[in-house]
Amino acid sequence: MRLLIAIAIFAVISLVGSKVTFLDRRLPLGFRHILFTGAEYIFIGILLGSMGLNVLDEMTLKDLQPFLIFGLSWIGFLYGVQFEVRFLRKLPRYFFSITAIQATGTFFFITGLMFLALNLLLGYTGPPLYILSVTLGATGACTAQSAIALISRNYRIKNRGLLELLRYISSVDGLFAVLFFAIALSIAAGYRNIPFSVTEAIWWLLVAVIAGIAPAAILILLSQVRFSQQEYLVFLVGTIMFSGGLSRHLNQSPLISGLVFGIIVANLCRHRLRAIELVSHAEKSIYIILLLFLGASWRLSIDLGLLLGLCYLVFRLMGKLSSAWLAITVFKPLFKSPRILGLGLISEGGLAVAITLEFYLLNPSLANTLISIIIISILVNELLSPRLILAQFPEAEKL
Image (tube, rainbow, N blue to C red; front, side, top):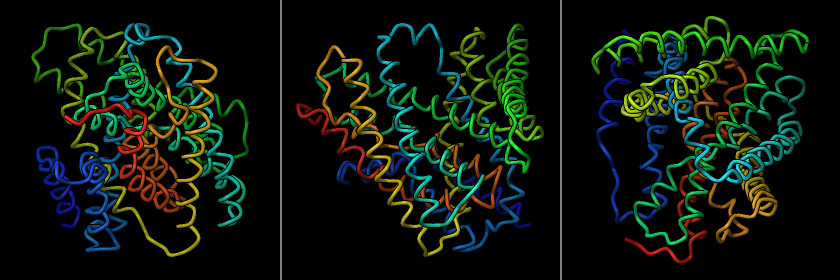
């Protein structure tokens, strides 16, 4: 009975939440951004979880994991289907170089410092220390597009080149984050307690890729016949569901397999734009479900773990600032670019949430520390990021 109630709650909140927007132009910009990104659903998840009404207790969340797997596969597909090589080639090549340096530098900066912090503050050692620090490096490398979109809607920006660069970085750096996360999972052999071997790591990655190729091949074959919009929606939902279920059955990552699935469809399927339209339409509902899961899965404990959230915020800010500065120093843009470009890249967003929940799926015993850090980071960064982006555009005029 509790499971049915939980499913009904998820369905109602996600459907209503996708239609309702609580934006108010009288609110400060940071609070508007928090509402714009839907971060309030984290608090609803906390209220429904074991720290609140206990409707979504540990057993119920475990029973609801098929919805989480589907959501992660959907987010991976949505992210991957945007990477059409022909479109990316139209933009300046140095955009990619700047993004690569910024994402890679941020990843290694956060991973190294969080490795030390986790060891010194919580005493983590061995595989848990490694995989937690690398996962935090991956979430820290992500940049959300929401804050940039909010600024674009409310301000007239004259430096269009810089705005396009920020948009490009926030669209592409997540690809590096997922790649680093995938490599980390492969080295950890899917969290199995077995000794590391290169063969095992390569095999894990290969199986994850195959779990994305198989549904992509099915969707492309189905796309060869004549179909209606409703039939194509059934094809798309069915293959994304198949991708998530297959990857989970093989002890792989639904997020990574969904990403591979999406990239293949973006470049080989002639109905790519139709696929983007359909998955984008349901994006907010899926993201709300992930935020509810994130909040309901959290178990707050007052200890040094909370200090790690502050450490992560500082390390991520330092990593973004230094890596972005290095990137625009090596590959100088053709337009005015401030040295504090990294301040415009601190919004964390949906992909970081997806990586966190992927970690929760594969290793729930370590997930609470990660969830605590990410929730603190999301709330603070989404509050501050719009004003920090505006600092990049001193000539911006409010609409």
